[in-house]
Amino acid sequence: MTDREEELDAPNPLLVWERPEPERRPAPAPLSRERIVQAAIELADSEGLASVSLRKVAAQLGSGPMRLYGYIATKEELLDLMVDAVYGEMIAEGPFEGTWQDTLRTMAHRMRGAAHRHAWLTELLSGRPLRGPNAMTYSEAALAALGSQKGFEDIAVTLQTLKTVTAYVVGALLDEASERHAIQASGMTQEEWQLATYPYLQRVLATGRFPNIARIVEEVEHPSQAEEFERGLRIILDGVAARMKR
Image 1 (cartoon, helix red, strand yellow):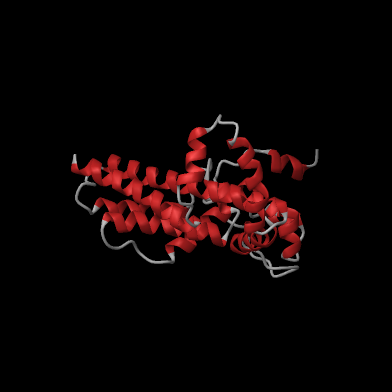
Image 2 (cartoon, rainbow, N blue to C red):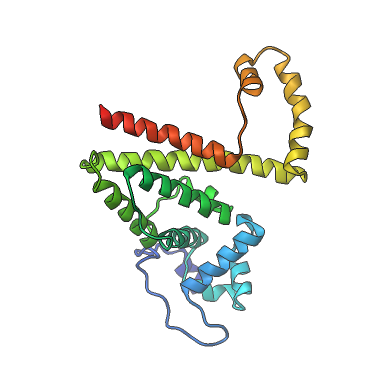
């Protein structure tokens, strides 16, 4: 094992947020964490998250992959930085204003909007601790906006409310992404995909084994994903309001 390989394998006591960047060098290509992260985001936006690698990002920046290791030790660090950069985009949309319902609705729609701009974001939102400076700034702003409202004096209640809304949003986004992935994998339009899968669904429901799913197909109106998202969010907010009344 080379010295460089041993260095890369050694645990780093500092998280990427605290670790200083190398001194800037103008040649062969100027680098910074910000440029690396932006290049990775552009790559993920155009080709998908699976295409993101330090080698490809380095090539996009006109650099060798080994130079990137001075700024980012692992691909996981790069993914963390990408998510945090998107939280920076959400911060730039402005402060939270209005009632507690307005704050929670703004949070939900900002996250959904970010996931629609960056389709890869949904995959990274679940199971990844949000400890970057932008994510923490965003969370602090949301906690402060809710904490100033009547009924949210208890920070534990405020935190649990934020977690509940966030869990709903991530779940809804995963549901949207699963349908989008199925349609893309089929190579069809959404309408073509629905027409192609409906006969199978009819055959399965005709067995009588799934009466409640059959009721959903026959009785429930199927709105757009945006309308369905808003309906679900309304149920969550109604639940919070009911709890506050108690």
